[in-house]
Amino acid sequence: MTRAVLALGSNLGDQEANLRKALDGLGDHLVKVSGSYWTPPWGDPDQPEYLNAVALVDGDVSADGWLELAHELEQAGGRVRDPARRFGPRTLDVDVIAVWDGDEQLTQDDPVLTLPHPRAHLRAFVLVPLAEIAPDVTLAGHGPITDLLKTTEVAADVPTVRPGPPLR
Image 1 (cartoon, rainbow, N blue to C red):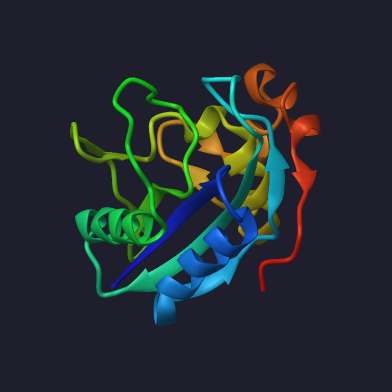
Image 2 (tube, helix red, strand yellow):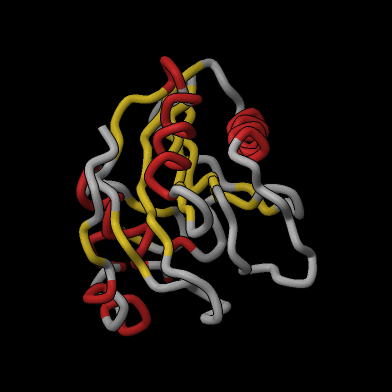
């Protein structure tokens, strides 16, 4: 049995519906979901703003299994990967942020899946909703998320994270 944090985002199409469909696709794995948040695009500013949320999930799923499920949700959500725009617009983006096996947070440095997510500690659009539903989380190698929200890189972005519509 593992627990995981998944970050969800959408900036194309009906963003609310895209996130709701992904959350529905998590089925019985879904334990808790944050509120939604409007955020500016990260990495490629020439695109619409994102609607983001974070989900806590658990199940008899490996870390790679969570990634496989994330990709299935993206595919069902109509995601098209454009290799020319790594941080480009998308109907649905689902990232595996962290995974725990019991009380142990898994770390992994693999080209397919790095745990914890290699940039989550820098992203207010992940940390703000995560702090809402799991303020005690620590990202291995980076520290408690409450401390990460105060770092220079993240604190400047926190005011740009605005509440969005309810997803549940």
